[in-house]
Length: 321
Image (tube, rainbow, N blue to C red; front, side, top):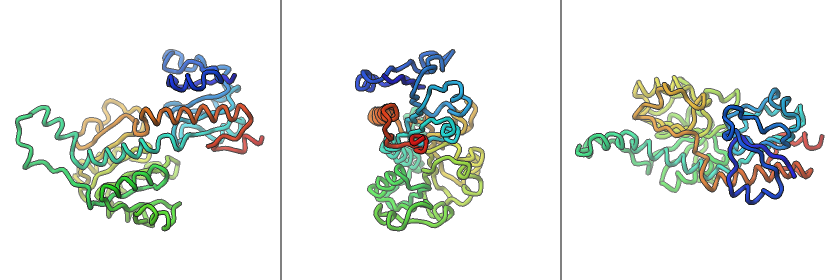
């Protein structure tokens, strides 16, 4: 049997399905004073986003031969370090797609309708007349700008088109044919997307090139009174620049599922604003998506254990070695 360690508690449905094929160690949550206590001797790791998996950690636990990330992003796994040490790195890109896209649309609608502000005000003063002062925006006929059109961005585009929105997207890796298939417009520059959009939603990976992709200059290029949404990675956004744009009234609001760092500090000003909706990096999580991600991650760990090529391996050269 393969010995597996996870940095979060394994769902019971996964234990029931794979229990006869793996020895599942305790998770980090079960031993907060010594979170890596049960990692020694593990062949496979099911990794979340909250720990950095670098060469230092891998050298401490040389028995680990595969790290499977529950999600699409692998920015917390130092892939060159893993490759150098013969550790296969896998991820589950299809697992969170539906949930993340649905959450992005939810946040777009909640921001446009000023849900956070009116919910708080109504709870405090239920007898007030809100009809005249309410500034909620209809998204039908409005323009949604997407930065990134991968699995999640494409799904958001389809949902937005179904809502009657015009969608404009920037992604250097897609062709006009792909945009036409989705029923959207393709822009050659980010600036064109920002200037045209009533709502901008970012769906890009976090790399050295994309860190603070949305900075002061970018926010200044956005349409006056537009909304900004981020369900990708907190590091894509310069949070001080976002606050400044909101303070100036350049943006009408924002909705954020991710921060930099995570978790954000309690004094992060974005957490307290009525014009910013915040969620705790749960866009990709639902009962169904959690089961998909875990099932895929454990299945790929077993594939490596059995000498097979995993379905979503990031560094396949390790397998041939």
